[in-house]
Length: 111
Length: 111
Image (cartoon, rainbow over all chains, first blue to last red; front, side, top):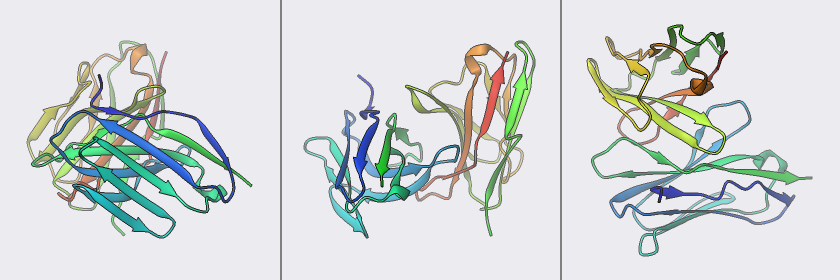
């Protein structure tokens, strides 16, 4: 079992839809949880960052962490064609700067 | 503005040749990372460095080496290129916040 599991999709939704992206993990030492967005032929860029459990909201984006279930989610409200990208979850343990990434989910938002 | 650059952006080489990919960052970050990204595997860590003269092996380090002689640069060397090393390579840096800033990537084709 890989440390971080993410359904690679692809996922295609109409504009305006609510999108839910998820990752599960097996390492209970993970304390830092991130979502990166990667546009085609570009490097990933940090979208959301959460420490430990709880929710974090930034505009149309909400990140949730449920450490008891080892499950993290990213919600995108009112999705836009400009949200079309690959979304990667990433995690890190305390005292380590290394990130463990999920495989990434390719999202397409159709106008 | 601070940035992270990679060169070359595209490279075609033959099996058995030595190849060096450059990574340069102007963030003055101590931490630097090399990843490869392949379909079905996501981002996998090759090598990383927490400071000058510090290097560490990642998940897929066989056939690769790095050296860190200054803060700004972490070149990645493929000792004897193999077709299995055809991939997109990303360099990243971080200043200790676990937010890794990624370069634009190098597309390497080994024939």
